[in-house]
Image (cartoon, rainbow, N blue to C red; front, top):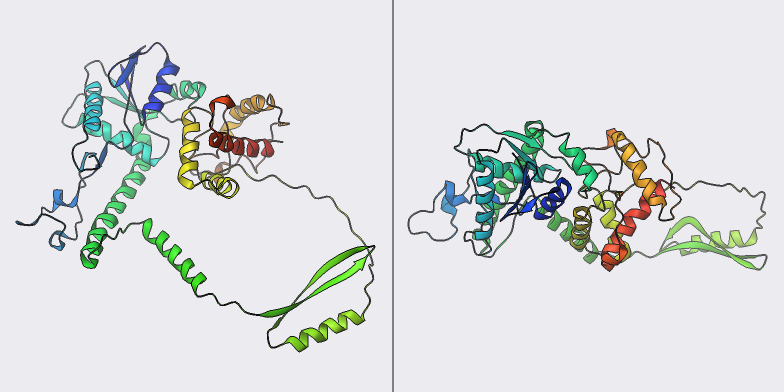
Amino acid sequence: MTVIIAEKPSLARNISSTIGGMARRDGFFEGNGYIVTWAFGHLFTLADIETYNPLPEGEKYWTLKNLPCFPETYRFELKKDSKGKQDDGVRKQFETIKALCLREDTDTIVNAGDSDREGEIIVRLCIRNALKGHDAPKLIKRLWLPDQTPETITKALSEMLDDSEYDNLADEGFARMYIDWLYGVNLTRYATLKSGTLLRVGRVIVPIVKAIYERDMAIKNFVPEKYYSLVSKAETNGAVVLLQSKAKFDKDKLADAQALADKYNAADAIVTGVKRKKDKLLPGKLYSLTKLQNVLGKKYKMSMHDSLAIVQKLYEEGYVTYPRTNSEYLATAEKDKIKKIIENVSKLGYPVEFKDSKTIFDDSKIESHSALTPTYKIPDKNKLSDDEKKVYATIMRRFAAVFC
């Protein structure tokens, strides 16, 4: 029996639907030699400082007495609710995952986290804690999905690698987690205790706040400077031609500016030639997540949070490829898949055709995930919200422009 652990319930549903013939159980699907269960994103979180450095006797709140804390070995615990208490839903789902992994007929466990470092460690932590203290050998595999269409899932199930092949990706994820903990927990407590008010300190928030502060101060301290430039308003064939000189004059150089203007006014200008040429305007590159969000923000005033949530939903429905990518290029191995997408996109009336170009397919420009594109699965527009239509259409139009 093969147990597949998806990062989210939505992915578990897509996988079980692709496999087919699966019955719904309490916390998992089962059938055709597979069990598909799921996490809710992070089920585990790093333990707090008091796990390593207990509070001194008589202390109930944050104190400088157990700071700083640099664990030699990091410990994990099940995620708690907003009140700091055990989350019963998280505990129940992990117990389900653990029981499925330890079943006697389970010989293979599949990590089906999202195809990035975070997805890798989310499910890896579930497997690690489920098998802790048990010697029964289990084969651990990795299901890597660039999108969630049935064809991609079927192909990926037949090409799974050992999860150990992704150890470097997991190390990257754990390193990010440990560094965030060291900065966030130690410095947030220290800054808060010293200032007397809650001050959040972290790897991401500090440079963002600093950049906002510096920009705000630059605006606040800006002093406009007066200068002069020359503008022509000559009339040619009944039309006014506006030309602006590149020369600029400081506020105390008005006489110099006027002298140059008088010189220009006294002279004649003769058109000695006209050149015409056609330029081919190249389309923009395919979208990375950041570039897509920039476009959506400028065009539709859509927040980063909202645009990410929408593109994530489109991905989970199988309409677009993996969204959290920083690349604007496609992998050469994806050419056949792109041809199929183009075939379906052309049915929508877009004049698209396959182009085998280095400006589109370039493995050297891809770190882990290819650019964001539509899949061959075209959504029913009547089933999309207005904002979902905007996001999907933006991705589709850029794809069509690149392959037009």
